[in-house]
Length: 123
Image 1 (cartoon, rainbow, N blue to C red):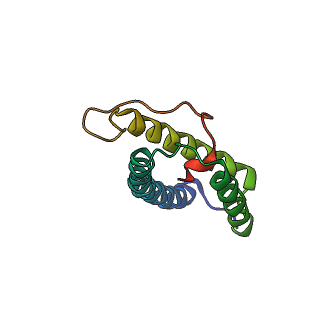
Image 2: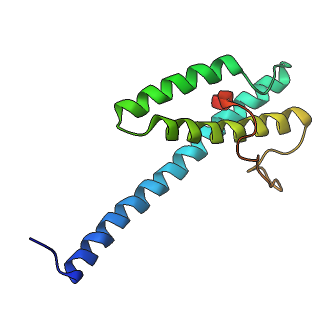
């Protein structure tokens, strides 16, 4: 049985409300993740470690691709998403190491270019 336009719009509004809630949760989760990666960046800078760790990046990509497959999510999409996050984390780590304020800190701005760095910044 087909829905009339009014009923379809009600269903669409409910679905979009759920999507909006998930988007909000993703932003909060990313904020929490970046709090931890900032700690990693400070630790790496203090101990002279490089911002990127290609071995960890490879492990994280494999792990998250497998999780994506289990969740019926395109693994290539999951990898691209992780690479974007990792590039930003590496950018933050480099800023920390150079003494620049990290994004999110008072007066900080800017972000890494997509595709810069590798997936390590899985941290």
